[in-house]
Length: 113
Length: 118
Image (tube, rainbow over all chains, first blue to last red; front, side, top):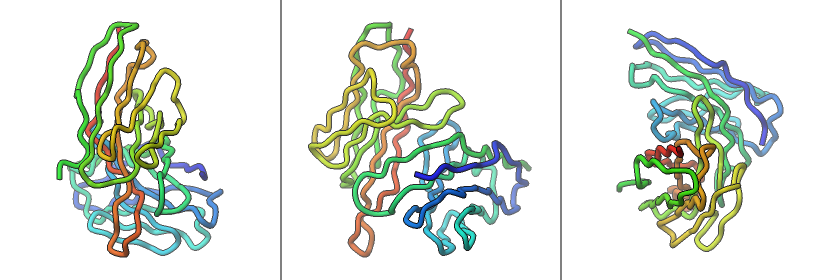
């Protein structure tokens, strides 16, 4: 699986959009970009994933560049409850059998008043 | 649905003691996983079970054994605990069935077991 690079920390004001970048310059054509977050030592929570098109769900939007070498997770209106460590993970496929995830150290997002 | 449940929530062991961490899921997922997370680090995969009856090693399997008891339950055993196994242990499952009938493999995690080995 391709490696990812994320900034160690970011700040965001409550109510503003939080834009979390991820570089995955060695991504292969069949690898998806997944985002998870971990709030204060709880179990990680799945947020969103995508292959090459932009994706949106009730939690966030995922923007993947045309060359797929980087992506941005967007939390449109960050709240204090979005303070967490965000992990960008690249892996082959999105369906089928077991999916082994390789977690890095992620980006610690601090949302402030 | 309770999702993924883990017991116990906290445990303190002495070096050399054994214990089993329990995990259960009620989402009819095929695959289950055990991870450990050390302070300030990301999660590392210990073992996983792609389907009932199968188990495979992950990144850090030494010192652990697993049992996929049935589709719902996946246990992790420490036969002789060591201080290096002090960590937070997370269980996860995957295999959500989408509206298209395909099995999607985003993982759902339990709340974790905080283990201290003295």
